[in-house]
Image 1 (cartoon, rainbow, N blue to C red):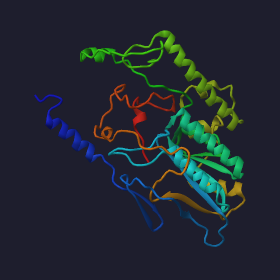
Image 2: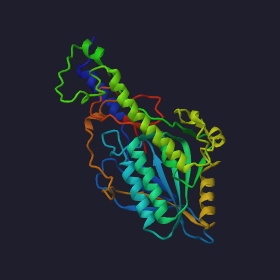
Image 3: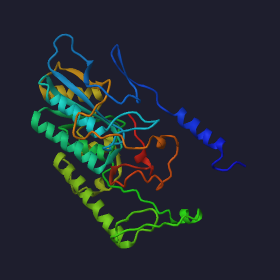
Image 4: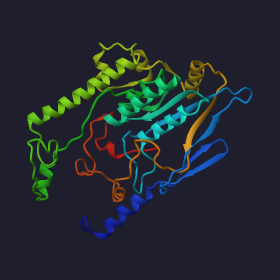
Length: 345
């Protein structure tokens, strides 16, 4: 039997990884196709792509702004990755809309399980600031998934529309930690940490978490959870804050969310656009999407890629072993414990 390190095993893993690599991303709008390769480092400026037009009497523009995938303030790099920093890209789109007086409303189309507590709070703050500065109506349209931090961002909208099959809610906080002491002992690995400060390595997988250390981390999670509740109270005053079960991390269907007043209506993207037109007072506004062909930094949140490309070679993830991933408190519906390694566009 071949050992784990046998060349045949490595070759098989490499072939699997390469087979899963994504090719160039094609953004199709009407008859035009824009190529966006994951290997291109210098992305171009934002451009408008008209996707819904009123040929008779166009009045103003409504922008569709996407919030997709895992929301972290980090660039997506590696052999099997494509995309860019979702926090930076969101801010850049809002800035472009705010600078153009032709826009009359925004539809934020959301398909995300959530993400980092800080990343989603930044996006929520940027959307609130955008509303205050522009006075433009904002409608959130929830697609397949809008849970955790994705719903956190949606609460900044003036109106929330959920698809009939949307899953939303997930109002909770999670920090993924693992105890690998038994695994390390099995492989005869002995930790040799040098530290100054009793809790400098709190949450490390090489040692169990003491009761007092768990209490420290629990207080941090509780404070972030209270902030999530406060954000819902601010953005959704029609929701009854006495319904504490709505804040225990569970998810809801669209009809359940409507009953709890976590959303305003159930419908489709066209309905969200119609609501945006109604709120803006421009019933014949055209609808555009902001897309780009290349990608330089154009906002304060842009970051240089800092994840090793080698990480994309292995199509597997062992909880606790990915030490390049910093521990992060997440507003995230996370049935799979290594979800923070995943993202999509």
